[in-house]
Length: 210
Image 1 (cartoon, one colour):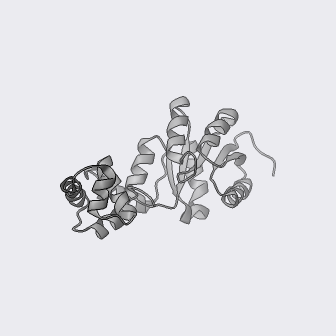
Image 2 (cartoon, helix red, strand yellow; image 1 turned 90 degrees about the vertical axis):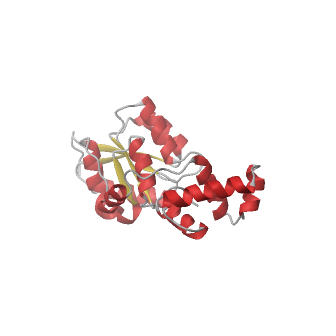
Image 3 (tube, one colour; image 1 turned 120 degrees about the vertical axis):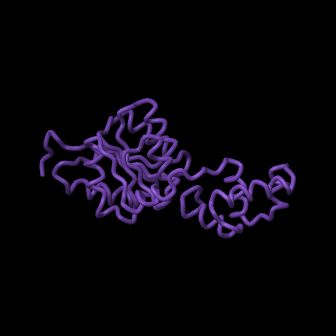
């Protein structure tokens, strides 16, 4: 089908070629969309954006070399009107909040890519936000929640790596008591009582990824 003058030119950024090919095929099936180009990491995304000036960019968040959130911020700092929809397998409210705060117009879960992608692209192209219902509910549920500090997140990462409090203290060159204090604060913010539950909640909310 010939392209119309109103075709939405879409740049696809994902580190998996199969995913890029699948999205490209889906875009070509739409009469009002055009597959403008692709990139496999954040650095390539910035270069391709500069060269192609797409109408909408689909940006995977979890990529090697430079992740999608950093690439989004870099592109938006140079092109304030860039319309970017992030792609992710994570449905946590914290990651969504970071992406939207960084300027993303949409937050698209890969699990619902086939049903939601076209609508998300059209919404972004018209300057409207696209957030799945479950993400919107999670954002509302945790609105006003105190965020974990970088140090608290770092300690939870070490817990995910299997380290004990003492090992974490040695790794960070702080006292055991300092580690315990940070954990106590993290538990309070996450509304949990132990390390395992804290880790589960942090991962489910997208505070960090393994």
